[in-house]
Image (cartoon, rainbow, N blue to C red; front, side, top):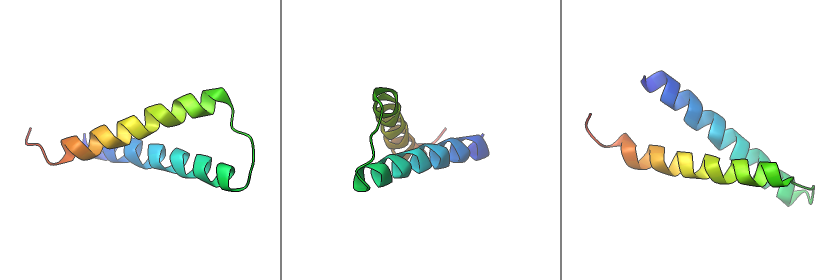
Length: 55
């Protein structure tokens, strides 16, 4: 369970970094990528908050 959560968090972080790099290079980002980036940031934020909670 921890491995799958870590992989999802890593993949979401990688997507966010790719979007930031595209903005820095003045490349266009589609509306789908913006929406997906918002969901990825929300997922990372939720994962960070829930990481320290006991199960």
